[in-house]
Amino acid sequence: MFLEIEHLTMRFGGVVAVNDVSMSIQRGEIHGLIGPNGSGKTTIFNVVSGYYKATGGKVSLEGKPVTGLAAHQITALGFARTFQNLRLFTSMTVLDNVRVAMGQHARAGVWGEILNTRAVQREEKHFTDRALELLRLLNIAEYAHERATNLPYGHQRRVEIARALATDPKIVLLDEPAAGLNEVETTQLRETLLKIRDSGITIFLVEHDMKLVMGVCEQITVLDYGKKIAEGPSAQVSRDPVVIEAYLGKEEDL
Amino acid sequence: MKNQSSNMKRIGLGIAALVLLGFPLIASTRYQVHIVNMAGLYILMSLGINLAMGYCGQINLALGAFMAMGAYTAALLNTRMGVPIWINMPLGMILAGITGALIALPMLKVKSHYLALVTIGLAETINIIIVNETWFTEGPLGISGIKMPELFGIPIDGAERFYYLVLICVVVGYLAARQIMNHHTGRAFIAIRDSDVAARAMGINVAKYQIMANAICGVYCGVAGVLYAHMTTYISPDIFEFKTALFVLTMTMIGGMGSLAGSVVGGLALPLTLEYFRAFKSWQLVGFGLAIMLVVLFFPGGVIGIARRLEQVRGLRLPWARKPEKPAQTEASHVP
Image 1 (cartoon, each protein chain N blue to C red):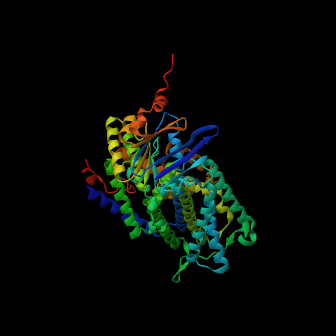
Image 2: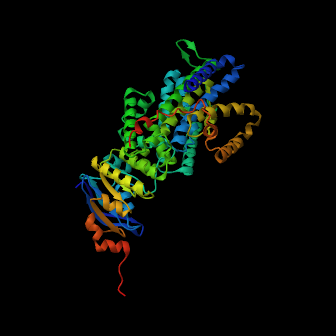
């Protein structure tokens, strides 16, 4: 299995945000994680990406254990993520937001940077070229030198995705990338997701926009109150009565 | 138009270089040169704190202790073993840098105002050690008889000659800081300041860069300390007390936190202004406090912040304004 989550549990005091969830993701697929608000989706992301330390269970990528590593080490293993409430580097340009995420490949060290050696110049050029390439992929290259926070909201979301891709990930965790986007932007996002998938990067997607989720995800896992209630191909999940009940409530006998 | 402005810039730089190089000749007294030399040392320390605090968001009030590490390294080695400044300089830089890195360790655990307290505590500890371990540091009496440097048999004595040594250190220090900020290390500093959560998620080893920022800050203060020892030929612990850190912090905030040019502006402006108000020496600390409050309340970006604001509003281009990098539009616009 590519990404394996086994018996993951996350408690905050008495609250069990994620309760014994196991799931796995295949390489190269777009895997959706859905569920009503507060069902533990973002918590799973935060555990997988190392922001929280799991109370129980384990996560592994390509057989390598991830649980217990620091967030930056997890990123180095091939995870990248975006944030539900944008967390861009507010005082940096769009270009620098993306370039800084490529730093784990910086080999130069501070002395090389001070002396601005050939190797550093080459590396810097590589960072810039790659960053612009990613910005073009997300159609925001023209804003490269704008301050990231001056961009419209939808574009800021794209900067987050470009930044995540800049870490050269094997899998990206996208936390509600369509939130706050209009119809047109959502359609563009959908194309972007497919492009990213086609470039060989696995996508783990938390999203409330069902049309988008059903449109792009091969597999879907459904959470409710921190527990996994359904899993499978999207067509099957959308017809699952348990899922419908979690979203719409149960029909009561009168 | 573009050519004209770049020509203007070149002329401006040329004039600035001439003034800087010729300053000891146009200064009317040796004391004036001495004051400017001191300002140079403050600029170095200010560059250090700007990297650690202005860019990386790490409050550090142990600047006096870092400077003391450099100064005492130079003073002890020079007076006891006759080691010249050229060897004391790298040694002082290394020791002050290590001190900076060590002070950063507790900083990884605490934040904001607690952090300020930790660094004050550590700085005081170093100061108390210097005052009390008289067998090693001569205690409150200080160390006198430090030799001024010599280069190829030419003595660098007197403020006028020492000025050029300070000038070289400031220019090299400024350019080095600029290179750091123009590359990955600098971007990582800013990323950590803006959002440490996102920085971690982007693979940045936050602890490593925080330690590095403080070590670099230490190195800058160490350089200032070594220069100070050899320049004044006498050092005593009171120079490295907390008020030095406060002084440097004030000038950096007035000049502009998060701007290297701000360090130069503040580092020159504050010591020179204070010279005019020598009579009010005992009120200095009150003045610093007020200045910091006013800057924080009304001009968070300091002098450079005001200049940048003007630049945006009126389209003025200032000589130190950064040229935007080559725009990417040409290629990008072809993409549908």
